[in-house]
Length: 403
Image 1 (cartoon, helix red, strand yellow):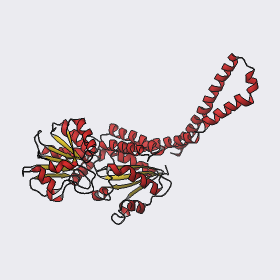
Image 2: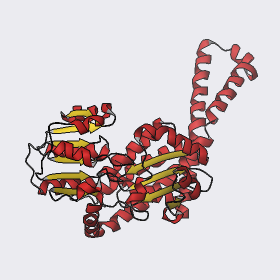
Image 3: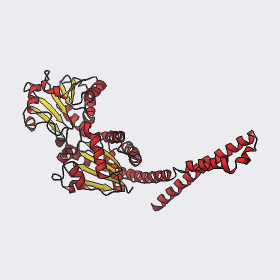
Image 4: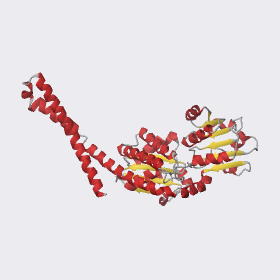
């Protein structure tokens, strides 16, 4: 596991504002991360960004250079290096398992993190950033997270950031025919839109910078989608606004808010973006109920205390998963090392037939040749599989003896 590394910027140590500085716009992520991987000399890279963390999962024999990473994001003079959480070797895998099973989340027990981890890997794989090591790590990570959520009560009464925000919105008792504006069509708003429509709020218009992405979500839930550029000219008004984008600056400006609300009737804004999408002046209005990630943090902390009883069982599962992954990794190393064996065996077989025993074989009748071919194919198959099996068994026995 020595090549595995993690650099994490989280709510816990760096703060939510710092996390936002490491968020990448979807249309720039691929080229930016490819450049980062090349600049740092990393072999594999996976990038995960959620509302309270930005993390880089790395495979490299080179030591992590925190200053270089901060400089790449233009944060070297903003964020102290000590605010980065750096993990290496088995500690990196341990951290990955904890993140995916929500044990390291702001809200322990949030199931949506599994989807976020899987989605992050798939994107980075499509962009050519990952390789076999991260593939194995994520495969085991998903298996581990599923065990935690099915074999423990850690996720009882789900309290993810999205579900917490939705529950607060429900308590405000807005009518089911309320006019809702949703800004952004990413995973967070996708989950929120599902909560809303499932519970009867269907008068929702989605505004997204990339219209195509907004239309995909709208089609899925039978809603309407518009380009974000048309938000300020909206004429239908609105009662509630849900926003979560990856923009670096304010999206819901003072002028835009006033142009789409028209009256001073009670409004609610649910802003789950990091950094926040909403102009601070809007949040101070007396008729505006404002819900943000910062508002949800104290609730998350209370829920964390309520779930401590399940942590012992989660830690036990984590220990088993770590051992299983270590064995999996060593087995894969054997497979890589023996990858050339089949071709070598085929070469030996061809040499024997075409050169060494060519004259002897030529003198055989067709039936004898057929039997000989069957025997050689059988030996070839066993010669390839048996050494592989024995090597895996030796490694497996050795790892358990060390334990």
